[in-house]
Length: 81
Image 1 (spheres, rainbow, N blue to C red):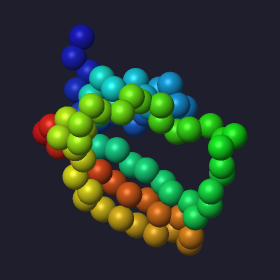
Image 2: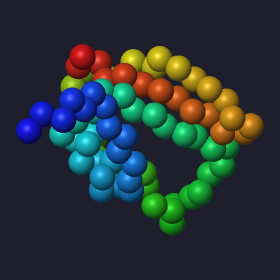
Image 3: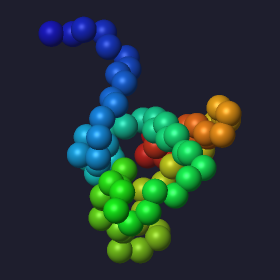
Image 4: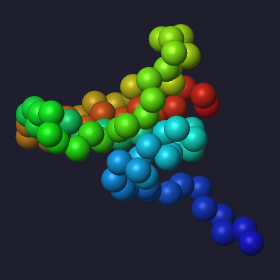
């Protein structure tokens, strides 16, 4: 069944985010960064495996940076496109 869907928003925790990244299922990635360190006991946003070499790492293209009070919103495109 064709639903004419051109985009979806995926918002989730570590497992959902990792699944989309590892399986290369995203065109755009939006990350929010806050000016704080949570430390060793905090939950990682990502738990994907490291690449064997820098040249095999997933490449992103930074397309927009916005500041909201002290937080930073960075938008990236998946370079496979």
